[in-house]
Amino acid sequence: MKKKFVAIAAAATLVMAALAGCGSANTTTESSAAATSTEAASTEAASTEAASTEAASTEAASTEEAGTEAASTEETSSEAAAAEIPADLSGTVSMAGSTSMEKLANALAESFMAAYPGVTVTAEFTGSGAGIEAVTAGSVDIGNASRNLTDDEKAAGIMENIVAIDGIAVVADTANEVAGLTADQLASIYKGEITNWSEVGGADQPIVVVGREAGSGTRSAFEELLAIEDQCAYANELDSTGAVMAKVASTPGAIGYVSLDVLDDTVKTLAIDEVEPTVENIKGGSYALSRPFVMATNGEISEQSEAVQAIFTYLASDEGKALVESVGLITVD
Image (cartoon, rainbow, N blue to C red; front, side):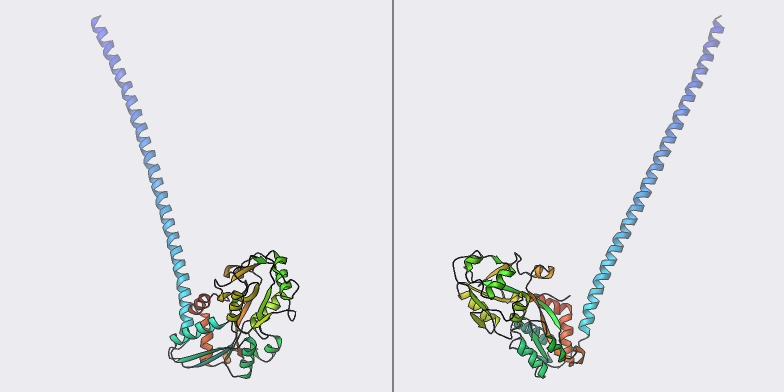
C-alpha cells in the first residue's frame, strides 16, 4: 500500500513539473514576442526620425541655396550695371533747372565725380521752366524739372526721364495750432476763399499765402494736383524752396509748400486729409501731393554723350538708388 502511494505521488510530481514547464515556455514566448515588437517599433521610429531629419536638412539646404542664389543674382545685377561704366570715363555733364532738385543734383554730382574723376558735372538752379528751355536750346545736357513735361515740350523732342518721386509738403509757422487741412480747405486757402485760420479750426489770425514764382516746377505741380492753376491769390511769390522755408518760418500765420526733402524743425508740417507727408504714405498712394523729379534730355538717353548716359546708368544702379533715398526722395522702381 505504501509503495502504491509513493508511485502515485511521484506521478503527480511529474505532471506538475510538466505543467510548470508549459507555463514557462509560454511566458518566454510572450516575452520574446513583446521584445521583438518593441524592437520593431524602435526601428520604425528611428527610421521615421531619420527620414524627417533628412527631409528637414534637404529643405534647409534648398532654402539656403535659393537665398544664396537670389543674393547672388542681385549682386551680379548691381555689378553688371556698374561694369557698364568704364573706370576711365571722361567728359562733362551740365545740368540746369529745378531748385527743388538742388539736393539731389549736388549729391549726384559729388558722388559721380568721386567715382569717375575724369568727368566734370555742373549744376545750376534756375527753375524747372528755365531748365527745360536750356536743354531744348542745347545750352545744357540735362534740364531738371520737378514736374511732368507738357505736351508741347515733349513734342519738341524733350524726353521725360523720371529719376525720383518727391512729396510736396504743406508747411506753417511752428506756433500755428492747426494740425492739418483737407485738400478742399487747402485749395480754398490758396484761391483766397479762406483767409483766416479760425475758419479751419485755428486761432483768429490772418493767413499769409506763400508760394513759388511762375515757372517753378513745385508751383506747377502743386496747383495742378489741387486743380487751382491760375487761380491762386499769393501774398508772396518767392524764387526758391529755401526762400519759402525762411518766409514761412519767420512769418506768423504763413502757409507755404516745399519739397519733402528740405523739411526741418523750423516749420510745422500740416497733414492733408489726415495723412502725413512721409515716404511710406507717398509710396502707399495715400498722400495726395507728390510729383516726379525729371532729368530731361533732348532726345533719347542713348543719343546723348557717353558721360550723360553714364549718369543715368549710375542712377539706376544700387548705389544710385541709395543716393536718391539718402536725400529724402523715393526711387522710381
